[in-house]
Length: 319
Ligand SMILES: Nc1ncnc2c1ncn2[C@@H]1O[C@H](COP(=O)(O)OP(=O)(O)OP(=O)(O)O)[C@@H](O)[C@H]1O
Image (cartoon, rainbow, N blue to C red; front, side, top):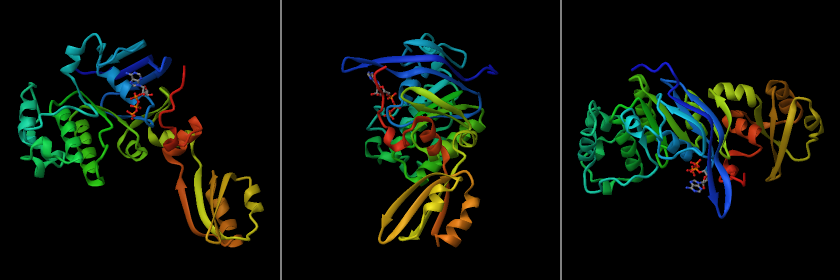
């Protein structure tokens, strides 16, 4: 059945929890729409509400209020129907420790009417060397990829992955990304959570940035950067004793941080027009080791929440 409608819709979704006698919204009036055929990322620091949102999408938790539709179904009320079209890889799962990777995936494939061949999934996720290894003996990264493999094997219309790249080295992560893209090439939709800016920017077609349960922004990574953090960071070193007043007062400099080290000053400044400053930095200040960095999604998060992404962990508060 073709789905012209969105694969996932959240309309004012709230999930209220209690912690130490205080109520707070782990998901706070979230609106989302995931289009069929896209890789959609829920990006947020620890505690932002990603897992709770994913559990609501998979029908594992009921929202306190608001409406959720997943592939045209109400996930909490129609879990059996949803299970035929949605597959989820949880963060942790009890696996059959004594089976080998190939045995486990064969069993898993037998649960579904039209599964992928286990060998294809094994190769796609770079698990060939581990195919005859017992689950109990797998490394953390291999185990993580096996969890994703169990979700991929059913060829789900909607593949839901909760922080799938946790614990993977760069090569394994690349294989994971390729496997996720292959699901899209086969006509599926992927929703994943991540706290990696790089993963969000590189893999995802669109991302929703979550903070304290709220969706603070949603769009393609490039759109979000253009809209919320078009400035670039100019980083360079000057000898101490240089007069920095002209730079500090320059109209194109929005903020400037100085770090003194080993008799020199490292300057990091934010600007919407790095080119306009380069002459001053090189010719008048003798700047060296010059780097220009995009603010990226990190800059978007900082601009919208006032928190640096790494410092924003577990910042839920009383609602
Ligand atoms: N069953 C629960 N009861 C009470 N509080 C909960 C419950 N589950 C999650 N929380 C709290 O809700 C908030 C959001 O948690 P959630 O796991 O959804 O965040 P997350 O973005 O997935 O973070 P992480 O990356 O750490 O998994 C956190 O403050 C968490 O401690």
